[in-house]
Image: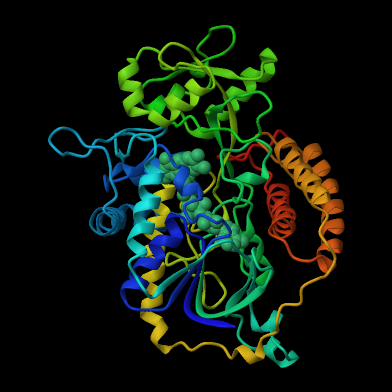
Length: 514
Ligand SMILES: Cc1cc2nc3c(=O)[nH]c(=O)nc-3n(C[C@H](O)[C@H](O)[C@H](O)COP(=O)(O)OP(=O)(O)OC[C@H]3O[C@@H](n4cnc5c(N)ncnc54)[C@H](O)[C@@H]3O)c2cc1C
């Protein structure tokens, strides 16, 4: 057993930000990541940028993008507090680099559905700049440890993991987590006063997606099993423009910022088509652009559409979008001369563990921040470049709340918590791979950009059969990171399915044909 003050699961922008104030106050913090490299996060892959503004139109832009469904209180907090938090955490402490002009003034860009230029960026690798600088800052603290290649299996609650039935009558709370050390296969029981879930989204459950493989909803599934409320799971945002490269499954993102800088969409008939779908054309909200592209692809029986930024000079493109420029060049497309083949892909999870504006879930001592959380900020659809900021703002606020409370907390008695009992049957990796592929296909085809009664019914039949099978062999199998992911994936696909069945109304990024 290991006892710590605060256990933070996830090392992206949300987890790292929430650790900062706690680390500075001398608390004993453990951060966990299932990857070997703590920088392997969706945060690291963010390209476009992060909002740095408190202008009066930001709330209405967030709300407009969400189809009037965003939680106004959450967006008011974000608009009011984010500038100060960003200055304190990124500028002053982490010293994150952003692009500036020759007079050292920050450069601002615009993305879809933003009414003004309010996004700061570092080339097209803003996420990397944020990720690496935050992690470097935290590495200075001796009271912060990072467990790498450790997969969180389950959150510990007295009701589920106590050694006596009487513990079921205690207040519902989270008192730690079981972690699988992937190298030794040992399961560690971590007891902590507070647990912060910062495990990111679920994009990787879709056949075509822009996310890291780890975005498989582990946090959503763990929280639900522990008894946390989950909300808005039907709202999966698809990014309209990812690089189309035949059969390759993970889609490389072609940032919205490129449309912000003037790129135009064309179909295979050389027609610009966005004016048929929205007055803002290429800068319409993401769901509108994604569905417009899909409609063009279906009508013309094409595999992709094309993005054109050829009117900009090669030097400008190389400097402003170095990652995209080099990636495309590597695939044989010189973006200063050629149009980029693009398709939509699953990108962002608007829903998640329901929290208040300090990241508190309905379970005592369990916080959720970043993409795993649902503050309601994004409602049914997310405004571009709000998610790094959301991780920053609500990670920061969660840490303040914890600092207010933690002095009066004590660690739960570890002797009253069961040890993890590991199964002994070897996992059949072939079965796991096949089941994961089935989930991804089902999510893409039946729980994707366009859902309908028939598709949802088909998804229900497939997911429930899979779920029975997976839970059967999970019980007796020796634990393995992929197996943990598989169980979570099937549970999370149920969340998306059930939320989609309940919601009869097309809204934001959720679209039902029937
Ligand atoms: C290609 C791409 C481009 C993007 N561009 C932008 C942009 O320009 N601007 C913007 O605002 N947003 C952008 N986003 C969205 C944004 O990057 C994410 O929403 C945000 O970074 C999520 O941060 P997070 O801290 O919540 O999660 P992540 O950064 O995804 O981190 C999740 C962490 O949880 C860990 N984890 C997960 N499960 C477990 C487990 N069971 N046990 C242990 N550890 C676990 C992972 O290893 C990882 O450390 C982009 C996303 C992608 C994929």
